[in-house]
Length: 144
Image 1 (cartoon, rainbow, N blue to C red):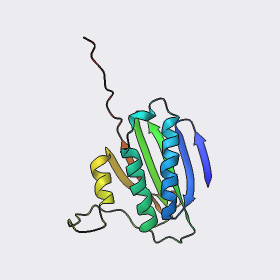
Image 2 (image 1 turned 90 degrees about the horizontal axis):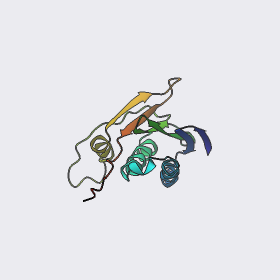
Image 3 (image 1 turned 90 degrees about the vertical axis):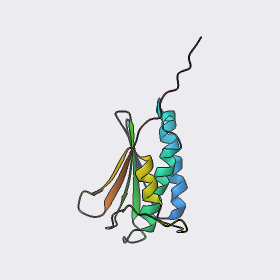
Image 4 (image 1 turned 135 degrees about the horizontal axis):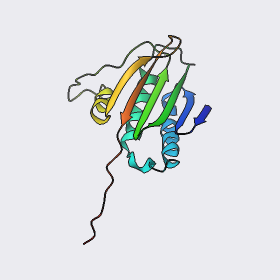
């Protein structure tokens, strides 16, 4: 695993395996724990990162030895998640039947992220899928 850090930004390259998904979520938790406002991005961030990473592993046409890069950044007050892979396929929003076992990952991303998208990577090999997550509102207790 190769790790890079800049203020408010984190990047790591992980093996392109389903077993790397928990590590990606762990890295996100550690990144958020280091931010003063990291607790404002609830479990939705972990869920969406897990879906983005799993899609990169399961739906790629890239060689199995290619790494997947995860990036986390705080952009203004939004958490930006990115998952970079060498595959050529693009995610698509589906309407799975109730008894379908797969096909809900992009649907979850579409419903829970403030915005999301897919862009080509620099150099023309692969893509990255990103999602923006708004912070949870701050709860203020009224004192009587």
